[in-house]
Image 1: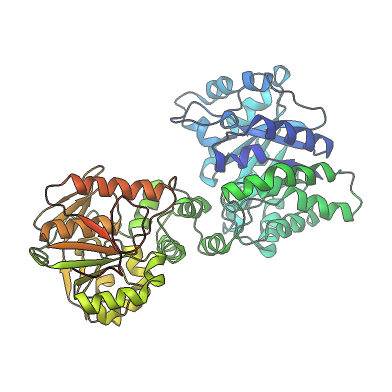
Image 2: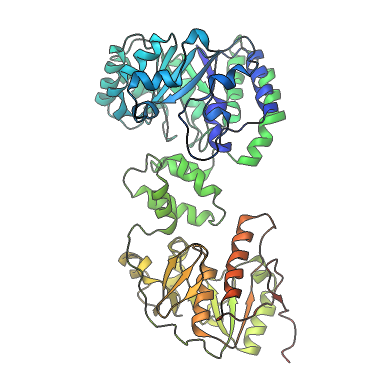
Length: 537
């Protein structure tokens, strides 16, 4: 049995492969002291756009500047796609990325490939073997493939000359022990060499699946420190070592435990890898974990919206592979390229009226009684940004929604209302509109353009897909007498949501159609400060 720790490679999906030198030094010393068999230092890539850290490339020049402790066999991973789509011949592409193994600190190269790349991968393996490397081949997204397909890929791999280990990966993190057993048995019908497994922990089964594979004779076991890896991460090195300790293994777990506590647990708190409910739901629905990772990193969206996005993604084709454009679709819940449309329904609707706009910041609940009293005393036209969590519906005149994820999260609550809803109809499907066909819908379109906030007769232009920006354009089109706001609490100074809202407010203030915005509850935004308790003189 061999443990292959791939922390610097798989963990790089959280920090762009830009590890602090202190962490790397501690990591290398720990895995060496722990007697880990193989250490995968990173990826091997051709140049990519944007900044990526050293371990996205793991070049020979960089490795020569590192002190690699004795003990482990060191390796890198290359995607088959990197070679096959390089524009070079396979032999030339491999030779541009790799020197002969005798001239390198790297002895192992693993090739990661999708099933449809297997038939093109033989020459990659052959050229790496010619250069003298130990070569592993990693079948990604093996879960759910039929026995026949898995066996056929194993047959092709066996036909390659000299492949040292054949891996299968639980890329979506949704395998269980039964699936692991099925895949191992299917591979074994054609492949009699060493097998390896790479698990993801989306459903909390990474360690169990690794141990089941080990019991079935799989001898190459992938792990990462604290499970650091794409999405929910991988089987934790320290957890596997703890189990093996009970079996009297020759591994030394204590250096890894110290590494975890001193260096990786603080990083985990910062970056947030690890299994949770949302990764579990994504795995259940065959949604690639990078979608979940990016949804969680987007500060605009709460749990309800992310759950809605997962449900939406599960109904699309090909979400087992990550696609940024598909993620944008999921976040807007609008996969059509429908033309921006709208009506003149909001023209002059609030002209010369005193308007109160309600957002869902914590202060709305804190000052609820005062806000209710203010509404009853001053009788403003009350606009709620999405459904208010606390303000009674009979005190609200209009609801405004611009983003389908917000709507889907609250769809059933809208059905119980009698108030008009202002929304861009073109962004909603017929089925979604049918959910609120009992309400009066006021159609005002929306278009997103960077650094622009403007109101037109039938639609608005906003710099980002934020409902508050949409509301401001509606008011610009309607020219009310005054605008007060509550629940616009704001965020910490360095929070990107704070900066985004400040940008929206700045664009609003620059418009000739803007009015002074007075916040009646505490806010960190650059608004005129008032008080919901102040008398109206």
